[in-house]
Amino acid sequence: MSSKPLKQVPRQDSIETVGSTRWLALKTITYTDEKGASRKWDVASRTTKQGIDKADAVVIIPILRSHKSLTLDTVLVKQYRPPVQQVTLEFPAGLIDADETAQQAGLRELLEETGYVGTVDEQFTSSLLCMTPGLCDEAIQIIVVNVDLDDEKNKNPKQQLDDGEAIVLERVPLLTGLKKMMDEGSEMPIAMLYSFALGLELGMKHASKK
Image (cartoon, rainbow, N blue to C red):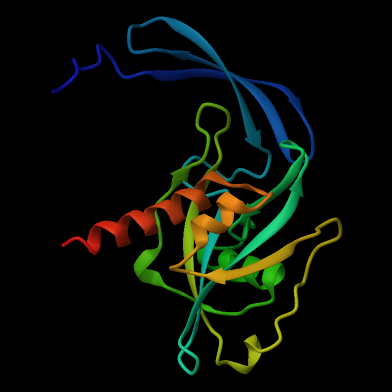
């Protein structure tokens, strides 16, 4: 089954900034759709955005492993999010500074939010990803970071939080119970985290049937 090809490729004609704060701007995009009609779309945009071909933020998937104890965990962050008026459960994440790569930002944010140090797993670095493309123009990259729990630097990790940040850590087994923990918890899981846990369970379920 295939759909009919577009009559023309949609194009952006103009952008008007309606209002702006330190971190966010509300903009109205005027664009021409695939049928040639002129339309408008309101969008939230980060004022720190560095271009459409660059990630604005990084999401970190920490892989905590100890070869001595055979531990395989991940660490999640809990924090109050005013837009949803409740505490959320998320992977560590943060904005990429102008002089950073996504990989550098991932290591920095992991250290600041969790206290753990690690190395980027280059095999699993993602391309640019959108979050809520109907609402905002934010682009992210996912960075997988391997954390060696046998390293002395990770024996007693200490957060390095910015003023105004209140982040509680939740360390959980990576392969077992991640989805159950979210289903039974009181926090609102971020969609990416829940999808990750659901994918793990689906993969293990169907792999066991082969």
